[in-house]
Image 1 (cartoon, rainbow, N blue to C red):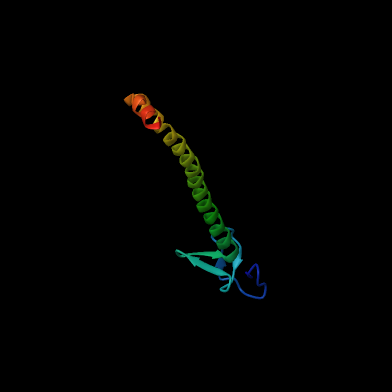
Image 2 (image 1 turned 90 degrees about the horizontal axis):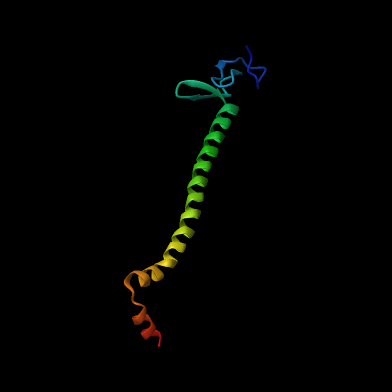
Length: 95
């Protein structure tokens, strides 16, 4: 059996992911399993994309929470005046 990429070389095994014949140069051993370099690149690319999606999801939540907190905080002085009924003191202060 010959390597899929190096037709002049004998294959030493097959990729655990795609099943292609691979030679010693093409082989990447991960946790005792043989993979071809193409599959290793694809597997790590998928992992990077999953990590990026998680980061973007957290970023989206942050973009929502910040403005929401700002809006809530802008109402705090008004709520304080309404609850404590200190309008007379405020009017005297600004007179």
